[in-house]
Image (cartoon, rainbow over the protein chains, first blue to last red):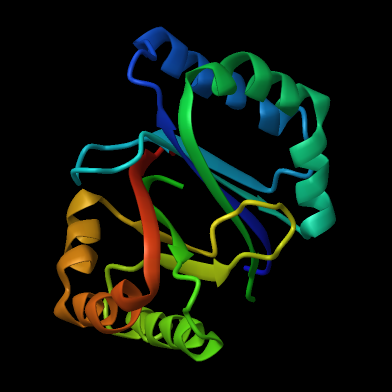
Length: 101
Length: 101
């Protein structure tokens, strides 16, 4: 499918609790109902297959770059980042790329 | 869709050439024709929207964890990692997670 994809991986702080990790997933799960630009949205915690992995990943697909920017800057998304994600984030790396048809 | 997703992001070495970066994409593009476990496969170089991003991301979807392991360990995949990816990789972080239906 064509479009624009946002990929981000997180390493949580060692002192992040199970409740804090679950709260991130619970809050992110609300966003597809709030931000219509989110064409596909799938996130999850690492399955534990490989040593050295990060803890959590989000993949979000949009029609185009502008739709991604609407998600990135949506105040309901920013509030989740500020209140739930940033407090437990040790490391974060992201890439956005064009999805070829 | 349900399944099992592999997400990996890379920061390339500063001395990685455009030819080396393109070779990674060209070689990875061969894998869906070789590894039938790859249900969906989309990779790309960072679009340059956000400062501080990594350089390259791969998202690969599988029916289940075993199908992912077949891809991970396929010698044609490993050869691309050894010959094209590792030589230009400065940093790499991955997550695998279950895709909920």
